[in-house]
Image (cartoon, rainbow, N blue to C red; front, side, top):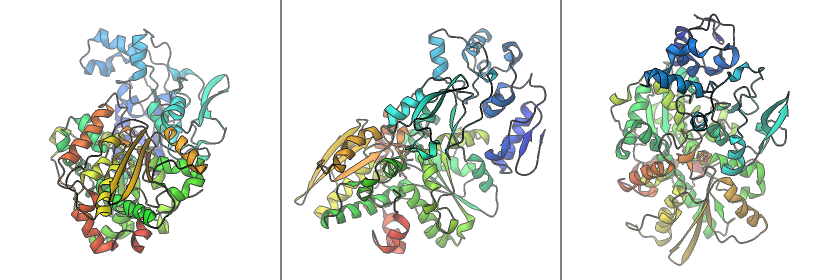
Length: 568
Ligand code: HC0
Ligand code: SF4
């Protein structure tokens, strides 16, 4: 039922078996998602189960004729979920059948139910509009769009760049860019909040599951995964794992998915703090460009490069933890393990879509070999576990692998707004006073969901004024003042593009559905509290890495592998 040359697989028959075969081809790495063409002709669709549409929305979009409720009645997942037949039928009447994967937990459907709106006619009965692929990682399918405007609002009011708008074409209201330019050429920061806001799958992030499955199944490759701090917060709520078991569960799940080595990129967050705080203290001592802005959020970096390039000298030159980890694994670990860089396949798992964009930047592919080969969102990771039919109740908790096993609580805090600043303050105080601090490690004033938070530390006659911003629109008033030469009263400014930081990243499930943002933040705070090491600079694996490889913070090798430059 599935035929085709190596690069294009065509589903030529209807039914569950065709879809299952494609699933298994994908998992075995024979094909990549971008090579699958679901739009070819199909046989009889009458008995095509809903299950298949869920997996392959393009099928429904492209070719699905109107299938009456009666014809599909037998396949309602609601029946499997234990609803009475009557309730299931009633529920199904609310579904737009837009082809998204949120079918059974859909905001739009909930709204429709509340207002007693029922489904009349499949959305795909309207004339087909070609999918817009004017951005490397964000895809717009107007056929599914219901003109709700949530993506436009998310861009303008949640995140801030404000690049989207409605426009009219062929008598239809479509979502496009304000400037009319392709999305990739606008001030889009690639945060993906528009994707997260879309209730019906009209906006999608490009998935990289297929190429990761392919690497896992390639016997010549050693496949390494590393997981971002914020992912464990969602893993904890999604799988019902207590916070103190979340990291071990995640490592176990990734091993079961087939990764050879699993690291925690909170380790690289520790490395970032050591590099970035050293850079900061050098700027203070040498009267460098101040205030210094953090550079670990790629959405924020994109914003500076595209909208405020004059601010570039204020950005820390540190790469993000993702890219520090990639460069360290491809150079240090490869050497240690005796593996050629070409045979090492590095995958990062994050709550973020901008990190897909970041990893694909040419400056992070020295000699054409990417430091991070693929970026999966936390949603993609969970989907891979479903595709492999992993029974997550049987996951054995595992430790992260050597040589980057130890992580500090400070590194874990990175996943929520204020975490980078808090970790930096824990180091700055020690460096300025020359004393080891054991208490007052919590800087609660920079935690939480306010758009702007402040803290001041006094140490050995030096005052450091810190600001924490989340949501790019909250950064703009500060940026404008700095560009006018006004003293904004801060020395160090953390900016994360997403409100609340990465726990609200667009690669996570929508917050109301899987754990609230407060719960996600609390998971990270709780893990920090019980961590053996709570300061990045005391992480013994970090100290060893400097001793064995980088020499000292901001050394020439550290500058080569752990720092970057920006493009106005
Ligand atoms: Fe984040 Fe990060 S904290 S940006 O949100 O700095 O995605 O979790 O991975 O790189 O560590 C995302 C989360 C990271 C990075 C870290 C930083
Ligand atoms: Fe990505 Fe985090 Fe920045 Fe959002 S705040 S764009 S999730 S790095």
